[in-house]
Image (cartoon, rainbow, N blue to C red; front, side):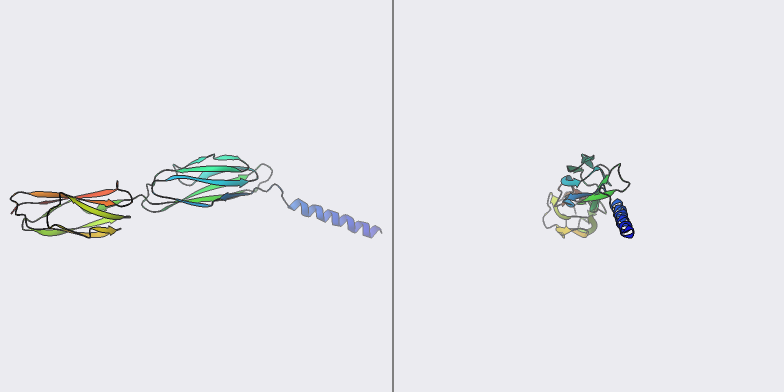
Length: 209
């Protein structure tokens, strides 16, 4: 009987040890949605946080604002992202770290925002000359967007190839002979389709025969 009682005590002791290994105060956190995307203009992303303790939220990109950036328990968090200044797609990670003073453990949930690149377009030269007898030249265009081109004023029978494009391209420009009796010029403008403010200009000049 005494041995059986001792076994019962040992069983209770083991149960107590096992119970002590389970930390009911362990921090936990989750976010919904976990991802978002924005165009090059930036914007606002809102996500819901489910958390059982105090938390802090931080961003790995300077200029991003988080409201609120700390708190306790569940919350709705608003992230404001400024316009992109990067030539490539940028991943912005918002880390929400859950922790409390009852345990040394922490847990981090993440909300990731994909920011489209800043549109850019540039030319290897900004001006050029064509012989009075006509002719052509080439200029290299560099861009991370689709683009279009226009000439002002348009010179009859001039050629710009290709007239539209995607990303980088070699541009061939040609003019016929200048029989007008006066020098002439045209401004050729390449503009990104997604962001008309992003443009590159080329001034083409030609003397008269």
